[in-house]
Image (cartoon, rainbow, N blue to C red; front, side, top):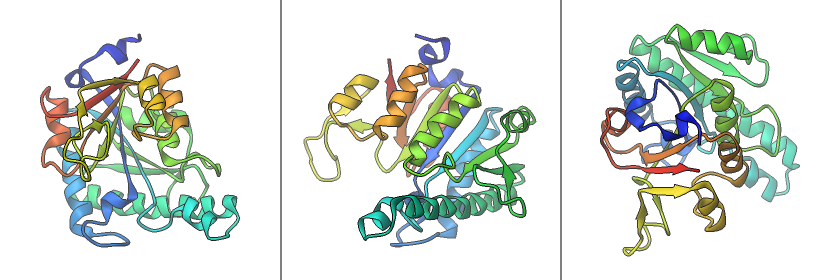
Length: 244
């Protein structure tokens, strides 16, 4: 096991925060809910204020989901590219919320659109992090057939992050949906192989395999719990740790 995989959450100095596009909807059924975006930005700021370097990847499912478009007869590659564009919109919204809090933030896209964000150049992105800027990686990997979970794991490895923090609606990984089953059991720790074998739905299989191959731990926690992100990095809080 690598040094980063054996660290406790309070020891991390550079992390990847992965959230879904749906997390930005609030109670709406579609799109962006500005107060929710602002609340998440405040959560990120609280961790940034601790001196932790932060990368982010935000899904696009609140605007367009490639798999749904594909299921409705659209060509899969085209649908996935549309989903990538949705992630850029979410990233720009989060950047605006972060900079309203006076946190310097860069949106870095895997698809070139120089008028609105930077192209992905690994060394430049690392330099931003070293300067304590938050880096939001948009447009997935730039390729169809890959999810933003896989993009988050890829970028986390490229940026030398010490862990991926997966913000969800529940406080960890359960053996079944706790919102549907009262007897659902939460794991404190679970291995990559168990996630794959039991289909626990933490991330898609490609992302889990990539994290496993690079001993990159995944911390699953509730993004709806105020102070939860900071609490875990301060050495407390409720979460599930996925590791080797």
